[in-house]
Image 1 (cartoon, helix red, strand yellow):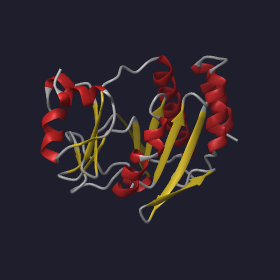
Image 2 (tube, helix red, strand yellow):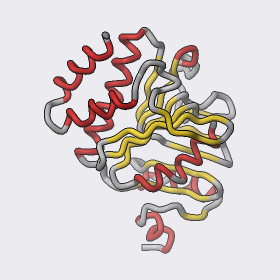
Image 3 (tube, helix red, strand yellow):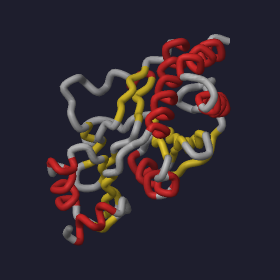
Length: 213
């Protein structure tokens, strides 16, 4: 294993040029990997995602989709979509959303979303099972720099969503979504806790009653 491969296997941010990053992320060996680039460093996530990460990812996306459907909020959700500002930044969040008047700005036929052409998503969600420190740190700075409006970190271990409003390249904790008005973060936390006791269909039925109030 080469020194670079060893560094990549450690699943940390490593210093690299943009061209080095592109060479890695376009390598067929990393076809299923997630890539991030920020401040002259890259992070390639190549670990397998397990049950807990996948389950929480599914229920949080369902909750957002259901809320938007019931409240009549236009939205487009994207899973593991790549956002690229060529030469400078790239991110591949677990889930992201274009909301309201932005719901239809990305046309079908688009592959990587070029942020030199299109605006960044309104909401980005990262599911943190083993990556919490990074999601709170470097990735949070990355999304601040990209100009995302809102950033959620789903802490699998603590069964908690931490939500941040982003403005002026900074972020602050919030208890209610700014891009989805009326959606309390505490309600999402309650839904997550319920998934530890009952199945997702039952949690979905409970969310339906909450959102219809």
